[in-house]
Structures are given as structure tokens and as C-alpha cells.
Image (cartoon, rainbow, N blue to C red; front, side, top):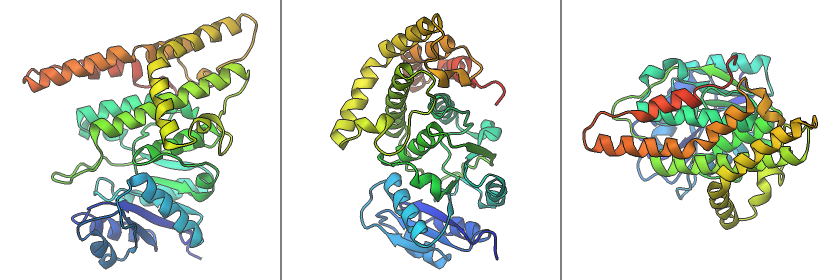
Length: 348
């Protein structure tokens, strides 16, 4: 029996006519079945994917990557697959890295495996790298483990992992939501180094400001809830225990979810100061609160201080943006990010 027969490739695609065929053919060199979700494309993406050998699900209307992934996960399960390899449609990943993912999956069948481009950091645009490093810092805190590249869309998902969590977010936030909930429920997220490809002229549908902001506010709101639970339940490390627990309590509706994110964004600094004070006060009485923070090699105080420095980082980013618009080569953000947020997991 072909050892990859229980694994298929999935691609969420939106207006990727120029790149989709090459990606599909690359995946089919390693996996027999490739399923593409045509997320309301207005070009010839679906036709190109079919000609390259993919099976295509047409969604009719563009709902974003998160919705397309949920459809693909469900379709793969219906067809009897036990795991999927997700790869982006824009040609920024090399399908010939798939065998390495399969090798990791063979020895760790229940773990999510995510690609990491950090070995090729010099090839990543500076502003993109800064946001990747920031995301890595906070997502790793929430997932209770170091995840080297939390924004990479090239991943292997055991479908048992997807079925054990509830996916409530949309667009690019969904991929972050998976890492947070999987890691925070005790599941391993392993990393496979991959090449960083940024082909000239290949467009991306990732919106630098709104999509980064959406991911950031979700992660911040998740951390505020997670640390609150750890603060009142001594010894607890995993705050997500299935649908409706942890951060999900505040996702009763899209409106309630957005309102909660705004609230936590406005209160995250005083809440972080409160958690820090409670952590050190509880230590005096040997009460083990905020235990997930002890997993890193930085002191809890230093980690929480990094959260409190977020307004200064935002100010530095705004100064850089204004300076670059005036053709002044200023780069305060990179130094600040490397100083505080590079990697608190020294031995990861």
C-alpha cells in the first residue's frame, strides 16, 4: 500500500491562474490526490487546476482563506484521508519539500508540522520578517511551545487535530487559531525547515495592515483569556479544552467576538501588569499560577515587560513608516524587534 495514500494535498486558491497549475503539478509529484478550493475566483484558476490534475471545489463567492480551509478539511475527511498537506497557491512554497513533511509525520503522526522559512531569513523582505518575528513571539507564548515560523501556510495537518478544535475565525487568522488551540490543548507543533521563495511578480492576497492587525488582536485577546484562566486555576497550562472553552467563551457571535477583541486590546496593558503582579505575589505563597510562562527561558517579568513595550514598538513602526515615505532610510523597528522579541526560547 502506498504510504501516502491516506494523505492528500489541499490548496485554497483565489485568482491564482498564473501559478496554480505549477503548484498542483508539484504537489502531485508526491501525493496522488490534490483538492483545490476555488474561493470565488474571477479568472481561470479552476480550469488551470483541473488541467494540472487537481480536483476542484467551487465555492461560488470569496469568503477568505479560513473558510476555504474549513471546506477542504471537511472534504478530505469525507474522502477518508487521515491527514492533509496545505500549500499556498501563489508559488511561494516548493512542493518538493513535501517528502520532508511526510518523514516527520511518519514518526510523529499526531503532531501538526509547519514549515519554517527562518533559515532563509535574508531572503524575506524586512517588513515581512519583522511581523513574522513578532507573531512568533506571541503565538509561541499562547501555544506553550516555540514555533519558529507561525505565519507559514505550508503545513501538514492530521485531521484528528483539526477535529479536536473548533475553528471560529476567518481569513488568515484561521491558520493562527489552529496553532494556538492545538498547542494550548497539549498537541505538539513541529517545524520543518523549507526554502523561502518570493518569485518576482507573483501577487499575494495577504493584506499587510488589516490581516496583520486581525491576527494581532486575536492573539492578544487569546493571551489575556489564557493568562486569566491560569491566574485563577493554579497549575493549569492548557486553557483550551475543546469547543466552547478558553477564548471561545467570548465568540458567541461575530459581533460579540469583535467587541471582545476591542475590549482586550484597550485593556491588555493594565491586564498584563495585573497578571505580572499576581504571579509574583502568588510565588510568595508557593501558588503555581501562570505556569505556561515558565516554559520559556526568559523570566516571567521579562516576558510580560515585552508585552508592556508594545506601544513603543508601534511608535517606532510609525516613525519608520513616515521616514521611509520621506525617503529617509530609518529602521528603528528591526532593532527593537530583535532586542525584545527574537526568541525567548533560547534552547528551542
